[in-house]
Image: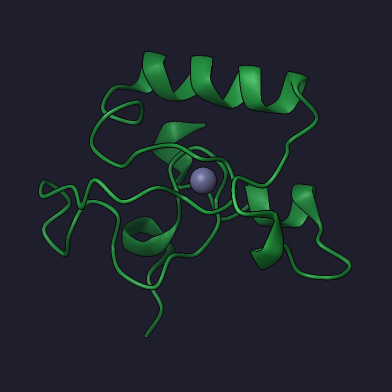
Length: 88
Ligand SMILES: [Zn+2]
């Protein structure tokens, strides 16, 4: 079963192929989110850094880090619903 708390990006909510912080929630992969460009384990390590990163990303117009992966009809608001609630 898909677990958004484990697989959703803490910044943008994009569901990742592998858990950004590992299945224990404490083992960051240091991969880059293809949507917001956060590095798991770095800019998403604290609530403050998450809020700052998300704010800047939204102010920039929520660009995709890897624009080739941006789905047609992408819905930012819908995706943000997958941000684990403790990181909003
Ligand atoms: Zn992201």
